[in-house]
Length: 138
Image (cartoon, rainbow, N blue to C red; front, side, top):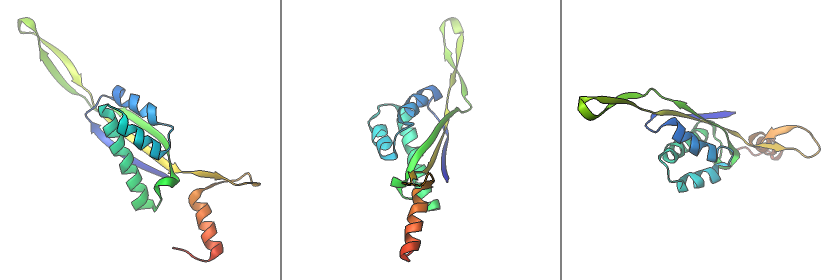
């Protein structure tokens, strides 16, 4: 199961956001949030907000716990840019672009390898099987 969170038109250039995204891409969620809190870049704030939104989506919509999730992917795309002009000498202007980015974070459930079986099962499926065997379901 995939949980998706998207932040659109974030006013930080995509190159700068990708630097932060690359540093937390393969981390567990707890470590990623801790690292984003320590990184001193504007892109870290935007990625942190999007990651927290994805965790909230997992909790509220899919009834998943925070420790059952991993970051599957972080995608940073270019948003439409604003065309602006900077005054120059002799009445001229120099154009530049105010760039923005779209951030998409996809979370998925952790997989658990079963001992003798070569079957991969998600943590949620394993928990449901244990509840069915014991007869208690919350």
